[in-house]
Amino acid sequence: MKPTWTVRPASREEIDGFIQSHYLHRWPGIVVGKLALQDDQKLLGCVVFALPPRETCRRYSVQCAWELARLYLLDEAPKNSETWMLSRALNWVSRTRPEVQCVISYADPSAGHLGTIYKAGNWISDGRTDQERKSPRVDYAHPETGKLYSRRKHVPAGIIPVRVPRVSKFRYVYWLDGTHEVRRQRAAA
Image (cartoon, helix red, strand yellow):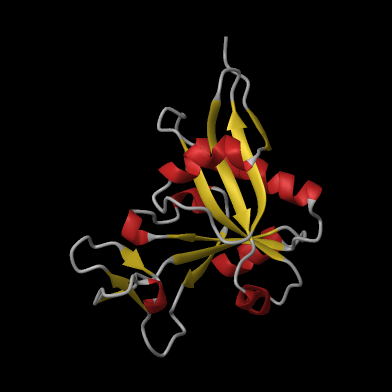
């Protein structure tokens, strides 16, 4: 018998193990939505939405945008499970939070992510982060452990960090305001 999968709202406690297993190992700043993928037996993964930086709403000329901040599925999940879950997660946002006009996400090439799940889900590629910046951004690495800090003020006292150029991420957007398909076709032309 084939298991039945559901995507449902989840508590922070239920999915914390997935977030700790995610390559970033931490929760995003301002969480606005948490969903779990569950089969008949157990949880298989999660999606976490967060508020993006203020610049995102300005960039897309919207009042309300969300960021897909974390997506994690167990390795035992079959091929295409991420895209399947992401589709249901976007439907959930559209149904329960109609004020959200678009969802953005990033694929981090330094973690081997190229945006394959977004391409498979017909998200619109919107360039790379930092492509408009005049000066490159850097992270600060502990000289012995290599642990990265995004801001100099986060480096523990007494440590002289090494500046490491930040890898530019791929940016993707999915419109929930009924204009996605038209915008996607325009972007592809």
